Amino acid sequence: MRVLKFGGGITSDVEAIKKIPAVIRQWDDGETVLVFSAFGKTTNKLEELAVAFDENETAKVAEMLSEIKIFHLNIATQLFSSDDKTKDKLCAKIEELFGYIVGIGNRAKNSFQLPLLKDQITAVGEMLATLIMSFYLRYEEGFDNVLVFAPDIIKTNSNFGKAKINEEETFSNIKSEILPLLKIKRKIVIVQGFIAGVDFLPPGRIRMKISFITTLGREGSDYTAAIFGFALDADGVFLFKNVPGVMDKDPNVPGGENARIFRKLDYERAESILEGTAKRIIFTETVSLLKRKRIPIIVVPFSNPKKIGTIIS
Image (tube, rainbow, N blue to C red; front, side):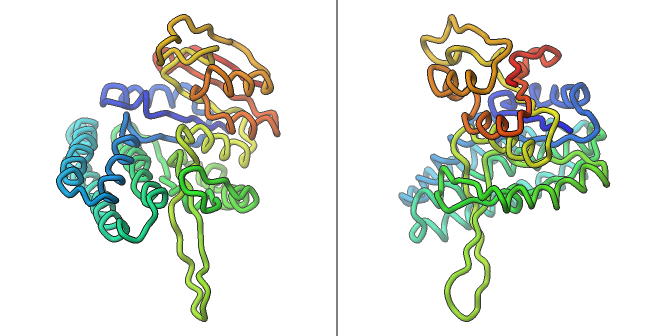
C-alpha cells in the first residue's frame, strides 16, 4: 500500500498534469492513495481573495474570481481530448465550487474572523484540483477512482490556519472509510491535501452538528499524505517535488543555488535539516508522524520520476 502526493509546484499547467498518469502507473502497487495540492499558486490567490471579501473590495473580488475560475476551466477543457459531455459535466461542477466561494464569502465576511474565512475559501483550491484530477484520471486515463472529501475524514481542533489533528478520530475514520475502498473495492483513492474539518455541537435543546473546514498549515499536503500513510500502515509515502530531493538548503530561494542533496537520511537527521535551512522542502510534521511507525518517506523529483531523490527511513 502506497500514498503518492503531488504538490502544487508540479501541477501548474496542463503539460505537467498530463505527466501524472505515467508516474502513477510506475509507482502504483494496486492499493494507492493519491493526495493533491491546489494547482500552481492557487492557494496564494485564494488567500488574497478571502482578504478582499473581508475588506469588502468588490472590484478585486470579481477580478480574482474571474482569474482563478478561467485558470481552472482552461485546464479542465484542455485535459480532455473530445468528450464534450464529460467536459461539460466537469465544468458545471467547477462552476458550483465558485458559487460556493461567492456564497461563503458574502455571508461570512462580516461574521467570520479572517482565519476562519480564509480556511473556508482557500480549501477550494484543493477541491478544484482533486475534482479535475478525478475526472481526468477516470475518463481520459482509465483509472477507477473514488474522490474523498478530506474534511469528512481528517478531524482537527478549531485552530484555523494551523489546526491540530484529532488522531484517534482521524485514524479511525481512515481505517473504516478508506481501507475498504482500497482492499475490497480495489479503487484508487483521491483526496485533498492541506485541508481537514472540525465539528461543533452548539449548546441548546436542538443539538445539530456544525462543521467547518480547517487547514493544516502551509505546505500541509505532505502532512495529509503522512496521516493517510500512518493510519493505513503504508509501505511508503512518496512525495513528488520540484526539487531533486531533500537538500541542505531550499534551491528555489536566493542563496540556495549550491544546495547539496541528501540521498539517504534517518528520521532524526531529516527533522533537524527540515527545521533549519531546508524549511518547506517537506512539512516537518510529516517526518515526525511517520517516524513513529518507521514508514519510509521517498522524495521523488517530478522532473525525473523514475529516479528516487531521497529516502528517509
